[in-house]
Length: 333
Image 1 (cartoon, one colour):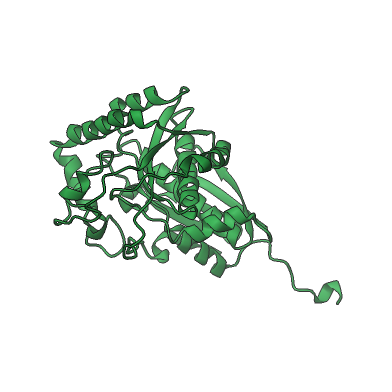
Image 2: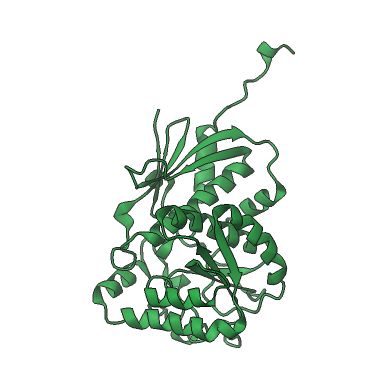
């Protein structure tokens, strides 16, 4: 066969590949399932924007949790494209004059991505936030070394907290809830997004915990209570606590935090662990100070992650809703 008869090699993914990858990437976690991202594909490059209309103005006035959420979808997308055979070269915060533009991606064919990347892509649809009590993850320390290597390019530190630190973290978690308890604007925002009736966004009632269930998880964000239920009623929470911390506290570091968080969650899911990411403890200076005092080296705590083992005899989890692809993706000629 002559060169003229060979099929041309695509230099960019076609529209169906982009749509499939971003539909999968939209399973990324976001604060209160706000899904605060927008994608624009110009047939050459893919651009990620944060959707400022979805900013939680009372809970997240600086936009830290929003950018972390966008970092998570960025890593989910890069993982999905890699599994589809595309390497993604990414420029983060490409234009300081337009801070809503968080990343620009260009593509190169990648016919044989590493198996670890493919495994994480397979884990995307299995990953979910588990707010119920969990068994202790006995094998977590063995995975920790690998996860530290994986998050290192994002200039973040990953630490597994000693169990002796748990009472202080639990106290910081309760303090965060107490300081917001009588803030009516904060509570209104929280109640609007939690127990949401929309089919496409927010934390559905099925993902909330009852008072009896939340009482057995000492490190958790306090959402409005679900109707009485005693799932895992014989289990107190024995999840271990991981902390992601950055060298500084900038939008670029928040974006990297989200990418590292996505990587950590998918790696844990692929290994059979259940996870729950928590950003409420670091919303306020008091919580950040507590966490910073527990870290072995200076850093800015960004996210706490509960990691454990869920009972194996439970019904499958109903996936939380996601916005239609048409709402988050614009394709331009």
